[in-house]
Length: 408
Image 1 (spheres, rainbow, N blue to C red):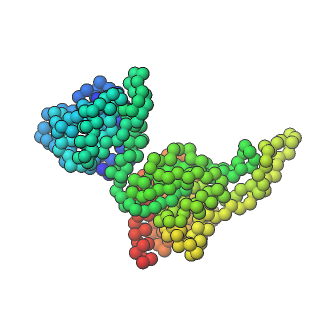
Image 2: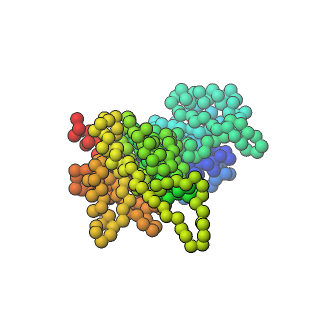
Image 3: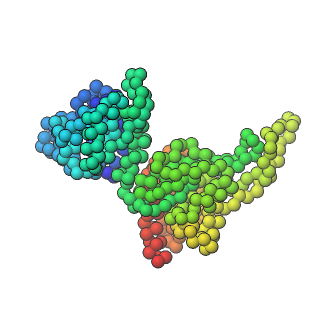
C-alpha cells in the first residue's frame, strides 16, 4: 500500500479525478485528497471524503497542530495533481506556496505526477510550455494531455486523459516491484469450441481472475503478456495482449509466446473436449423429434504438454503455475483432487478453486488454495479477484526465489 496525495485543481475535468480516486482506493492505497479552493464549484468535499475515507481540506490553517502543508508531503510516497491547471503548474514552477496543495508540492520529496487539463490555447501558450519544461527538468512527470472535446464546442489538445489511462501510466510508481525484470505469460478467459458457424461449446469463465492476475503482475513490476480467450472484462493497460479462441488456438499462442518467459500462469478455462467435426453450415432441425449426435474428441493438455517440453527446450518458462477449477464428490474433496492434479501435471504451483453455481465463474470474488510441488503446506486466500491475484503473485515471487536458489 502506498500513501498518495491526490491534488485536484479547479477545472471541469475534476469529475474524472473522482474516478481516479476510486481506482487508487480499489488498488488498496491510502489517498489524501487536496482540492484547491475553487474545486468545490465542480466537486464538493463530501465526495472526496466519502471515497477517500479521509478528511479533506484546502485550507493551510486546518489541522495546524500537525503542520498539514508539510506533513502530507513528507509522508507521501507519491503526489499527483489531476487535473493540473495552467495556474497550479505556473505556481509549482515558480515555487509559490499559497494554499495547501502548492505548499505540499513544495515540501514533498516524493515523485510528483501532473496530468494537465486546459484549453488548447492555454496548453500551447509560451508561458505554459516553459513551465512544463521547468517542471520536467526538475523531475516532475507531466503526462501529455489527450486531444479531443474540451469545454463547450472547442476541441484539440488539452483534454484530461481517462482515469484508467492515468492509473496505468503511474503503475511503475505504485508497484512494489517484487517481480521487476520478470517476464510473465498469463492465459485468461474461456475457450470456445466451434460446432458450426454460429454455435460452440464453451464454459462460464469471464476472464476476471486472469485479468486480475495480469494487473497484479504488472503492478509488481513484471513484463506481462496476456493471452485472452473471450474476456467479459477489458484487459488491463500496460500489458501485451494476444487473442485466441479455441483450445487449439490457445495451445499455438502459448507455445508461440512461452519461450523466454520466466513464469507461465495457465489461468484460462480450457475445454477438455471439442467436436470431432465442425460443420460448414448451421446444423438444422430436420424434423420435430430428431437431434444431431455430436462426437467429441479430447483437446491437448496444454499445461502438461508444456511442462514435459521443458526437458527438450530450456527456453520454456522454468516456473509454471496451473489453475484447477474443481468440484468435490463422494470420491474426494476439492483439495484432494487439486493435490492429485498437481502431481499429475508436474507444474511448480497449482491454484485450486471450487466451482459451481454462483461460485468463481463470472463472480466478483474468489476463494483459493495455493499448492506447491514438493510441499505439504498450502496458502489460502479469499476476497475480490484482484485481492486473490495479489496473493498468487506474492506466492509466485516467494516461490520463484526459492526455486531459483535450488536450481542453481
